[in-house]
Length: 398
Image 1 (cartoon, rainbow, N blue to C red):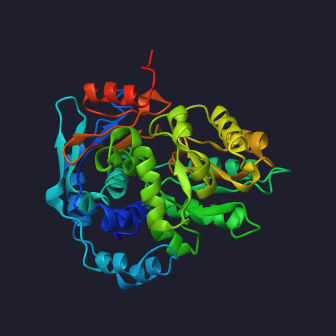
Image 2: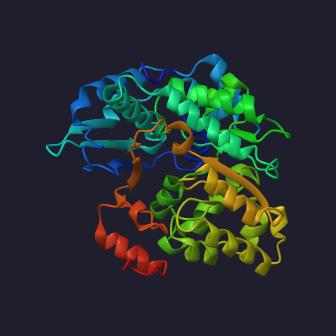
């Protein structure tokens, strides 16, 4: 079995799930899978593996949280005891997920049901699809090449003048495989060091954070802000509603705001002086990261907030060279964090699958993300997308 623990997922799934339990326990949602590089020379032709994927998901749905896992979660300062009690009786239900082979060679994955009972599907299902695909297409994986590439990355990070540059692993969903993921993390921790003096800040993966003594990292994801389009009082205020609901839950903890659900301009319109002071920083996940960083710093200054007291997190398709470029541009001007995903956990010389699972409906209403990278948008209702652009004053893509 690929997934053997329900905490083999990203921390932000639990932080969002806690908000759902306390504030939106009745919300009904629908998620849809997409492979962005499907059809390219056979990449993403997953239909032959549907039976295998279904069997792995069936195994996932038989898992329960173990006492040691619950104790680990409960020890986190922002996790509340009633949420841990709920997880103690929780299990994923196979009836909420379907996997279908399409004539094109692609697959359709649909997750539909109560948000509280479906939120934990996304990351392990993506990890399952990845590992099933690669263990079938790369039966003798070139791990020596993977280690050589990882060694090169570590060497680049250890260059003179980069001692304060810290990276984190955000690569669970698109990893080559679970065992390789663990090897990468052990190597990074051992070679770069952890803690205050180390360059490896931690991982988004809760299981490996617990197993390897690393810092678990994460706050909110796009689905949270998307769901608030249907859960808030009115659409135009949905981003503000999402941030206020988050602050209500965490009272200043986990204070990194995600900035790209409606594009940067719409984010800055809503992220006023109150939020600038309330939140610890913001995370970039689409569009030009250099322009984004400059706009964030200018926005803080305009709102009479010292940018040096705030954290900018970069997490969009990062490589180590790009991370170093960003570090040089922004070091000393603010606090910095970098989350590297696929380039850490799936870089063995094979083209990685660009796969996502995105929320497309909440309480029967379409929801969407309108990022600064149009290819990242995902919605099955063009009329709703047009309405969203109008409400948030977002120009249609050329």
